[in-house]
Length: 246
Ligand SMILES: [Zn+2]
Image (cartoon, rainbow, N blue to C red; front, top):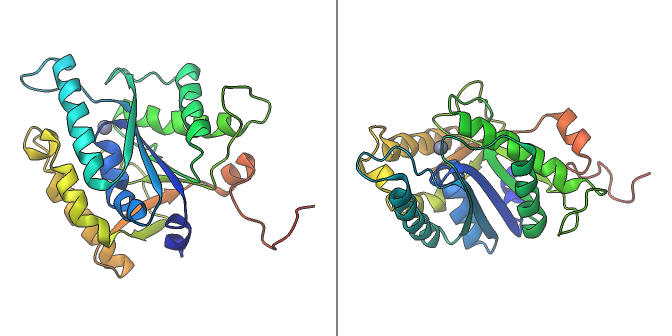
């Protein structure tokens, strides 16, 4: 079962375009994994500081830092941000190398990010930046401050804005993380009425819907990488037979 692999991981990294994205694509899972002893880190590429009706971008970024910290505390995870500009997340090599550096420093066995089929340009960029960051992190000849590292699993989480072509590969039992996730999500003004989108209703129903299909109270859906991508990345699948490879 996929749960056996996910909940055995010692380190998990979740990469979101904006603070609050990591919380919805992997928040309940993060709580469950952290409660089991994993070190879970949310990387918010931007703080998502645009779009507040009253606050300037700089003031809203400060508010979101407080909200991200409060949410992370409830989930038992750590967070960091590259503090890149919301709505202008650069989809370039320098940013992919920054993601690579975070991966090499934290050495996660599992990485979770956005599905690429999104109406939101920052979400598409975050998905590509993470895939490229994983690729760079594993390159043995690419010299950075930290040594190369390859995760064993890359997953794409479910986000209401990233629904173009999203098909779940895995449904993961996250039942123990649901209640803490609701409290964590509610730390964000975004989930308390700032946005016209009913985040808490949507994701509560979604996790329950996925749980109905998984046979658990709550579940989160994830898409996996293609077989060719796994093979190209080199180390993603364990050997079919235990023992040294030829
Ligand atoms: Zn977002």
